[in-house]
Image 1 (cartoon, rainbow, N blue to C red):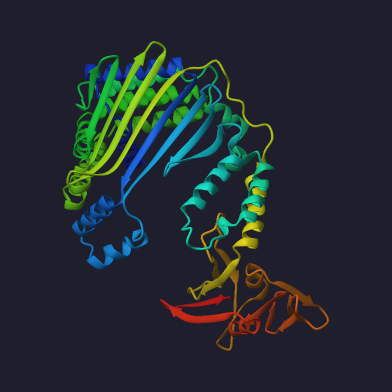
Image 2: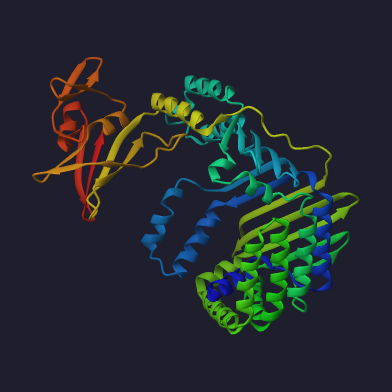
Length: 510
């Protein structure tokens, strides 16, 4: 347990402590704490620009892959899906965002612009006690984007006017869709109450600042500098990699200091979250045990440091690190906080990817009101599945079986086009008799849109169509009909049977 806790502490330090205790870094942290304290209820607006050069990205991916040892054939195969995509692409996201930290309720309204066309992506809500909601307009916006990405020279059900009308009518009936409730995550009311403490998070914000001051006194990242009205953070890939190494070295060299600060901070967290006396005592005992053997931390950090240094010395990793750059400026103007961030990937002086965001945040007196009426994601998915079956039916079913010690087969479905709804992989029974494979009739036929009827007197299953019905004889087991693989040819399907890596695979296609 001690080694596990030591490794966990090292990982937490590496992930969360990307700041130090220089005057600029402490000023930046203090401004962040001030912002959080003043913005328990706030509203923000901003814009995110994403610019991608597909050709430069392909060249960069090829270079990194070959540096990592991939062959020309492997690189070509990896980039095959992008053969028909080229040139520069740009996406712009405009959003407004409201947040209540006391209740942990959030609301976002977003538009997306691509290819000169703006798409309304509707409203999205998250509530710690209510769950996650999206509007029907969100799904409609995604559909409009998918439709515009379709090659208009080819026919597609997405371009069918009747499909669009039926989809719009379905989504108009579903103003808000509940994607997930907190009950589905298994959280009790008491646990939910602990996540959003009474009185807010103000005490914890100050505890975070004290943690950094106490744990990392004398440590600096050299990434934060003062600017007019605020602070700037700058880093490239190599600098971030060096920071991780330096941070591991610092933790390994100052285990008592880091452990003491961590213990104090975690006890503050546990008290605010109303942890039981037993939980607090158990945590304190674990930390005391680690403090009694700080050599474990030194051993762990040294091992992690050596592993990390070896990784960043790899030519492929080094090339990736050389390509990244990040810059953020956070300033305060009166009661408003402004931020500008740029993340860039550059290769041979060519811009591969650039993400730029601007935002402003200010206090808000309004509360985020969660949707009072909604439908479940399952209800909407059922309706979309019916639409999909009508306009983009399953064209083939593939069944794979033969794993040692496993009596189930894996069944996947294929459609003529990529669908708005995903077809889950199903696992189903199969039968082998006298060396011949029998597959479940009803499961496969219903996936293909067929109707199966069971005649109790004849003990025979029929596939029923408008022009009559076809008897499907086979094996009856546990009340289910299984038929020979080739018998699907009776229904006019083609059957492709083969062996794949020692497993049996059959594809039944229209």
